[in-house]
Amino acid sequence: MARVGPRQGAGPQGPGLPLTQVMAGEKRIRDFKGMELDVRTLPPRERHPRIFALFDSLKPGEGFVLVNDHDPKPLYYQLMAERPGQVDWAYLEEGPEVWRVRIGKR
Image (cartoon, rainbow, N blue to C red; front, side):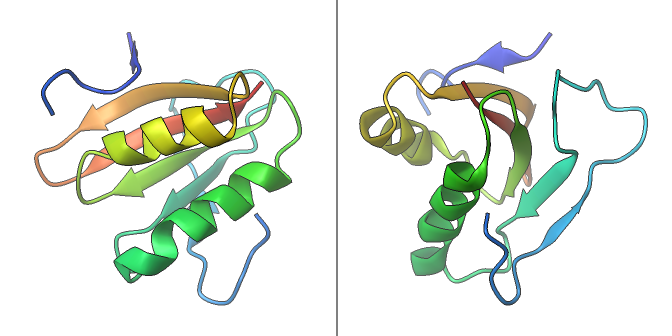
């Protein structure tokens, strides 16, 4: 079962936005768009703006999987502060090399 929230202790498609289909067989959520946003190759200063742009383009009930090279806990807190009551967050994979988080819009 996927854990919700940050780990304890620890969109609009722009050029080069790596959106791909989620692999077959993965557990799907209702109205999941089947998108994966892999930000590992983006410069760090571009990551949060791209994630927020995609999140803002979602309709309620839609979501995507974020792939990152570190625990995106700071993003979790930023989303909760800037989009209160709108974010569903569930870890799917937790490192040590890759983190995958399902981010949905309420």
